[in-house]
Length: 152
Image 1 (cartoon, rainbow, N blue to C red):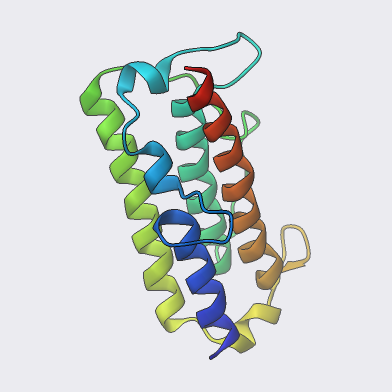
Image 2: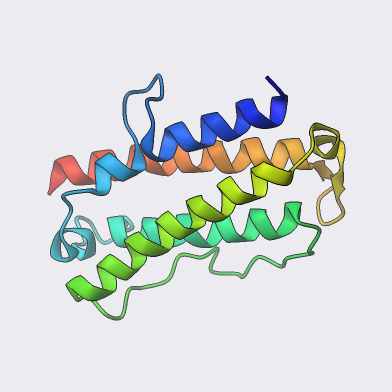
């Protein structure tokens, strides 16, 4: 199996597969309502919804980078308040997360192992580091979501 395929499988497992940590984004978010996702447990913590939107934007950012685009990260680091707390808006965020997974899966179909060594000029890190970084980023924030969900 190619390295690209192994990485693709790992990324898919974190979203809705069977990762060794036994927790996935899809399962964790499945029964979270808009009201729960929007609830601010502590003024110093992000909400589940803010974290989900942050994940979506970072997934897009890194995907654009490994597709050869130079991307500037905004000062707010993709943590912005949710303005529409409706169920429809929450469903849209969940669909955007699913769409980001589809885009990554499509990316991996044509990605070559040799491209893992390419350097992103914005920070001189390899595409390999970026791709593993976004997986680590997802897992880090998945842990936060799991804790926030338990506190609801």
